Length: 241
Image (cartoon, rainbow, N blue to C red):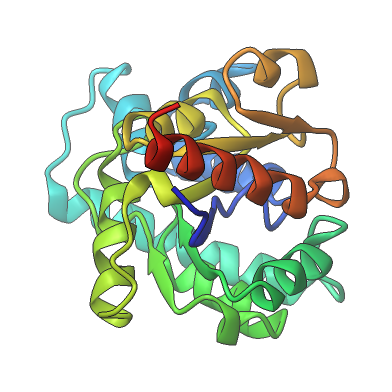
């Protein structure tokens, strides 16, 4: 099948902001008279939705909270995120992002984001980075009740792209996911997509074991070669070889 869409993860692929999220999560726990243990954020939260991360951190400490209270905590964290970004003159976007987006758009491929982050955080960054016009479909942590490594976010992105572009007839196999964590990679794979892993968060060799393509930086991803692989697979399906 030919490549029709490229779906980006957000934190760790578009913006290097995990340290901000860890600090805000630690602050939330402190306000609940709890403490974040060393390396706990990395083990529990990376690649997973904010809601699932916070819920697991609270549950492991014997705290049972309802959805309403959990949403209040997440909104507080989101407000803190907005305030933190206001302090930063230049957003910590990953090098090569603009060029990769240009490559995708110049090939008339559709773009989307599939992330566990809250929508208003994603939209804030895209607006400030002047990238919002490129991402017509965003699946955020607000949109699904599950978290990566479950595939529902990616499947919903396919559904929404087809709604937005009725003639697209997009299938999961025609999407390339760009991910930086094992949880995200697993989610995309379970959705039936091929994955390009970028070693922003985990070592290259870790991602190489489970990705179709692995790069150190976004600048290393050769979209033309990726498209050729999709085209070859389509030809094989057509000819039966």
